[in-house]
Length: 461
Image 1 (cartoon, rainbow, N blue to C red):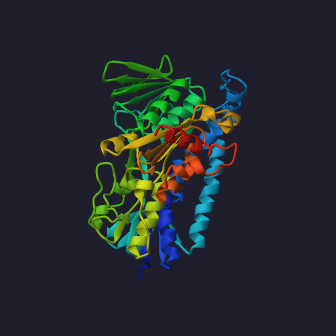
Image 2 (tube, rainbow, N blue to C red; image 1 turned 135 degrees about the horizontal axis):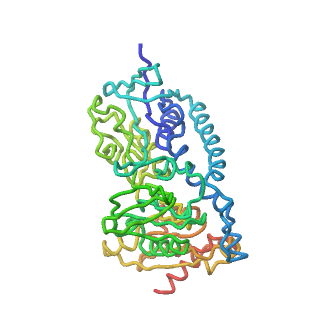
Image 3 (tube, one colour; image 1 turned 180 degrees about the horizontal axis):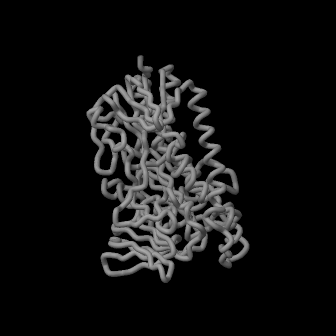
């Protein structure tokens, strides 16, 4: 007789892990299936945790904040390799894998390691080498994540022409790096390589970057990335990539006729959902061309007892939002009360400098004809930012001109992804910008930027 579970979760990344634990806390019988080396999912092994660890390691290895504070000369980066950074990454991955496994086990969740495939809407087979298991499930949560999208025109060699999962294969810091794709991942890795001293060219067919982010923040980020030595080639399509053996270099030919030279190329044009590997048709479902699954606002697929959450359902495809999606899916399937406020999900983009946002942008407020005012605090005004050696950041508050209700918060600079949560809390409680004016912040802190920005905005009324 097949083992039967109240919930089987496909994938143990942020969405799968939190969904499984939420169901287990409600005393449901839960199993999680994931590939053998992938407990913790893409987030732990090739995505969020590695990329953010790389960012922190770069800051420490290059002492960027120290140089900003005590000297303006460029560092000698020749003795820093991508593999040096990878050592730290491996340590963190091992620790986080153990943490996820322990959390699942502690909550009584059965773990199956292997590839999950649908046999019918309620039955899965788990393939692990020659062995296999079949499981019955009353409910299924598909949280199988994504993999880097590939193009047949790109001759990947996992050495000099790589996707973002194989960045560790680069033997050192290239003198010149070509990054194809200016989405979140492309911008993050482009800024990492530039911070290590590589001259970076970012190429994308789209005419603008991060069109969902407040455009003043985008313009400020673009300026600082150019200061790092990054060149943007926007509105440009790559038609051919190849190697020039006599020069040991890489080239990318563009539709406009330009030819970009480099020592390495990182292909970061989107992600491909893994749902196309699950035999969804056996469950009465189909993935789109990008391997994603369509869901409603409650994360149900077209088959009501099958849910999907995380990167496999598309934008915003962030670890933080995926965690909440998985939890909410489990709450809905088992009738657990919950509140869903996606409009207050924060976004964190870990470029150098990093940016973060929550709430509305100037563009959405203008489109909706909402009368608003802007308050800005620049890091150059804050004592704490001088101590940290970072004067290039800013905090921006958007609030209603008449009611002073806070409408949006946008940050750029060191620890932007941390301080954004102060604004998120005030937005959640429908607070006003007056709160920041009237409250007392520790001094010196970056959080003090809220008071500076509030006073700046209120003084304009």
